[in-house]
Image (tube, rainbow over all chains, first blue to last red; front, side, top):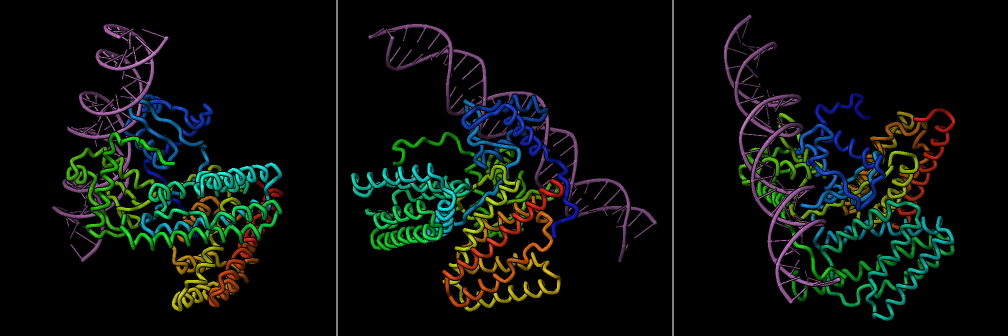
Length: 243
Length: 243
DNA sequence: AGTGGTTCAATGGTCCAACCAATTTCTGCA
DNA sequence: TGCAGAAATTGGTTGGACCATTGAACCACT
């Protein structure tokens, strides 16, 4: 099935640079936000050209592991470890309506599973934290007449965290970020999210009762209302003006 | 919500290069496998240094959009369009057993949703194609005594394709690839996949009957059997030798 | 003290001109 | 015609130079 003679990398200097750098970060116990050595210093210490260092750092930058600030330095953006797996995804044509609906279908899948896992695994502390976020959201919803997207998002994040699998938060957050870059004001639907409001508590109830299938079903209903909102928004958009 | 004073872009030369290159690919209607211009030519035509071109191409290479072959040229690996969204994911510690189980939980979520969507959207031709793959898989399973992982994978892919959302195939394929790079022979469980075998047909039956909830439930059962197999494999592994 | 401007060293971004290594293509001999 | 070796092509690497931005130190003025 897999190639019995995996081709060796003839030249893989920048890969070696990245490995060395990962080892360095690990050894120095550098965390997010911390600054790592200058390109010139790295080049000198690793006995490679500065250009090679730059190509390696460009890779890491592309993976979102590192941020370069001209005149200042290069800073870690995430925890790196020598045994990371990278899965770059590119979504073709993601900034139109159809693309948004496609990402929402992925989110529906993940949201439902995260809720189900959370119902199985959440401990007392997790449930208390989720309920706290839910209360905050409901309060914001009532005092600000439906504008509670920030608290809404935090509620969902607390569920992902309690799912016991960090990948849920990671993937959905990445989608959420993209999503907001292109759809900051969701299609001008003023009461966006109204319809989904009640399902937040029903999801929480299922989680608190450790009912995975119930949580899954309620999460699916929630996303369904968001999809409906978006479809109505798109219909409105067609009647008024285009972006 | 959004920053009222978004920071301005200082310099973004290589980004501009990528945009220009994407436009070029689009204009020339280049598809996967085709060769794109030499770095030297690009540098000359775009009036930038070859280094800048290289940084831009390094980005694309990191995203899996392009493949560079020394002495030969740079080739497209995927379709590129000017409006792509990039979502690089890095899974920390994905190559141990816990990491594998985490990715499998993601796959379970996507698999179930894809099956449900497929049950809703698959047309007659799609269903026929899926059944063909199913027949191939069952035949391979019987003649080769359970070794049908290649055909098994193709069956699943046909479901993703018929889901009407290319993101399912994209994400699961990326996971599948990683997965196989580190776990080529799944933990030495000899009858790996035996338990999941019957669910392939039950999933197909639900899809053919346009029963999304049934398809979702059967897909969940299938992945559950795979998880059980892996857990048994891990238990065996602990008793014999470590990797 | 505090405010604003200036200077200056550090750092990432870009450029250039080579050369190296792998690949492909061409050439000329058998 | 066939094929081995030369030559051209192409990505990979190097070293050195300069530019643009940043941030800290310093200074003048209030």
